[in-house]
Length: 635
Ligand SMILES: Nc1nc2c(ncn2[C@@H]2O[C@@H]3COP(=O)(O)O[C@H]4[C@@H](O)[C@H](n5cnc6c(=O)[nH]c(N)nc65)O[C@@H]4COP(=O)(O)O[C@H]3[C@H]2O)c(=O)[nH]1
Image (cartoon, rainbow, N blue to C red):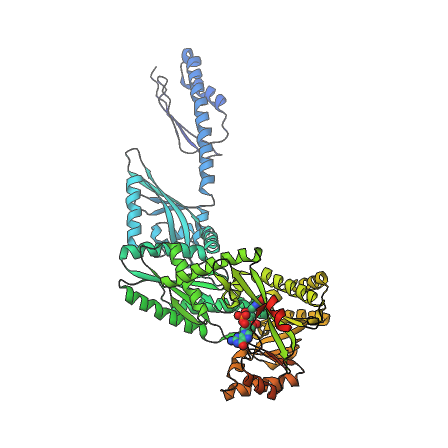
């Protein structure tokens, strides 16, 4: 019963070695070294059993063996499948590197070669450190190995170097393989090149946090950094500052030279700002033509911090002031800067509001200036905000009144009047236009106000047609450049003329010199169209702006209005007298009428008359009056 048989069978097809051992009981053991494919088990087993086993036991042993073999075949097929899966997995898209316990490379897959540039034969026997780029320090690797020792697993991003020297980021996973006694026998590292994902992520980040035009941090990133700066300021007990920078007259540049030109200027301003401050300071584009600089940790002394911030503001002003060369043009640009100190107690919106207020103040003081926030400014801003709210109500509640100031000829006969607006405020009383017109312009309220004035003036002209004494009067109406810039301005005037049925030649529109000169040729076209209807145009405050003859010739004007600052000095200041004389001569040469405003004395009138001036307006004849009083003046 105890027959010991050892068989060694080799198949030609698979090169398989197959041992069959002790068959004395049911014990049969097989040792498979390699998988096998086609083997006719039942036939050879039958033959084998016949030779080896006593006949009486033949059937029993045969059945047993057959069962064993069937199980074995099943296991073999399973192992074979697993092997196939492992082979496919090893040849995946991810690089795979297998080392022994000493980190010596045993095997790499073809993706490894594709990703690193190294063939298997070049790396066998080496350690993975040949892939190091040097971007991670020793501490990084120390932590990695600690984790591998403790958890047998590590994953992270690593910058490695390819065979050609290029450095790339990869996502690396390392697993330690252990034997039954928990000793590490291998390390398997899998990795993928994450350059593209990283690049995509960076692009998304750039889009979300950087301004695409200037490449500077945008408002969102700035707000993050500003809140951090406030936290740091509190922690370090030191003062920082923000500079709120707004370019002067940027809109005019954009309108006249086009957006391309404006974009190039913004890019250049951005780079000048960056080079005017320390690397650690942040320059951001806040929006449009507004930039913001955060200066952190200037000093723990408020006075010194203030001085520091003012010095930077001066430097920034200077940098912006240098001439720009854009598309072959030499362009001059300035900025208004508001400064607000950063200290721990403030909140982000408060700091921004203060800087904005100070910037506004810098603009008011004549631009190309910087200004440190002080609480009085706040009061001024609040007053302005109150005025603005009231002005909105004023438009709807008919608190705006038209006053009329007479205009006379050389014989002091009334030939017309200028309409001047007054605001009858329920609490403040009569408010002069100098106190609310620029606010109305800033807020856009000038559009409904201006329309109301024009409509009322035309209605008045129509009413004057009824009376002999007023029938021939011409009414001058001030127009803001914002009104003229409206696309439908011509239509608005035509509609008013249509509704009121007034003679257009009785209406004169007054425009300020500097504003018209700044405007686009579109404005000149609109003026021409209106002039063709019969409307007249006067240039107000003449002599105080650019006084460019070229522009003057291009505009469809009928009258120049000599500014009252020259008229006021005509008696005592020979320079002003010369200017007035020149204006009158020039108007004659250009075939334009001329009127002197602000005539307060007989002496002034005499001199003006001698110079050839034929029309006059001023307190000498009358102050601006309400309609009733103006009528009284005519009779
Ligand atoms: N010192 C002195 N001043 C004299 C004399 N004669 C007249 N004035 C003042 O000079 C200003 C002349 O108006 P402006 O140059 O068009 O300057 C106007 C005009 O630019 C603006 N404005 C007034 N009404 C309107 C309006 O309806 N629309 C627009 N857009 N602006 C207006 O407000 C400015 C100021 O208007 P007012 O305060 O009424 O001031 C008026 C008038 O009261 C004089 O002999 N001496």
